[in-house]
Amino acid sequence: MGVAEDEELLLAVLNSAPVLDGRPTDALKGEGAAEWVGALGGRGTSEERDQLRRVRDALHRLIRGESSDVSGLATVLDQARLRPAVSPTGVSWELEAAPDGELAARVVLAWSRVSTELPRRLRPCANEECNLFLIDHSRPGTARWCSMATCGNRMKARTHARKRHSTN
Image 1 (tube, helix red, strand yellow):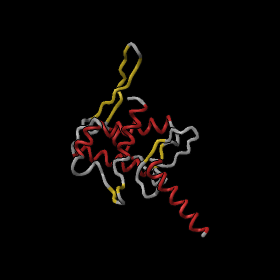
Image 2 (cartoon, one colour):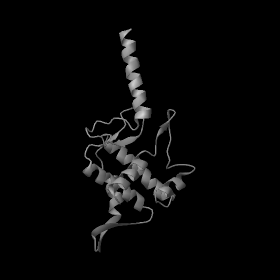
Image 3 (cartoon, helix red, strand yellow):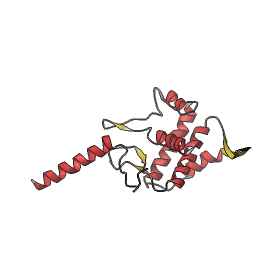
Image 4 (cartoon, one colour):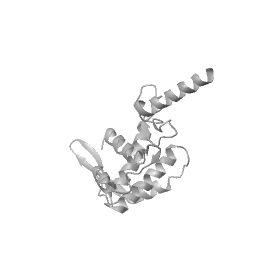
């Protein structure tokens, strides 16, 4: 899997618990969860969704700096291995894992790759009411919001309103 695919998978899982209209939601629970996981390449079983939730929640805490506990992530990788495959174009690594653990392992590997190749570019949205994450590809590395159109615009409007109110 390439960097772009890793980023896409990682953000899909990290952002699977958005706050919509002030209410937390979870794409990994309830109606449509199995299909959502299937669209990511998973099987959609309840065990797989539980594992993905645990990985997502551990990554949320880790990326937000709320915890440095990686034991849950290590447990996922303890059940997987990378096997080298040689071809005329070089060596590639193939993930071997239990069917219900493969997607969670891919997410952990994607997090590691993104964190290594784009250090300090994976971060939570600066809007404290938002529960989404972003990977900052801007040249200066100063992106703050998951979306400039939604959170960025809201935060700038709030700042402007606060400044205007304090000067009146």
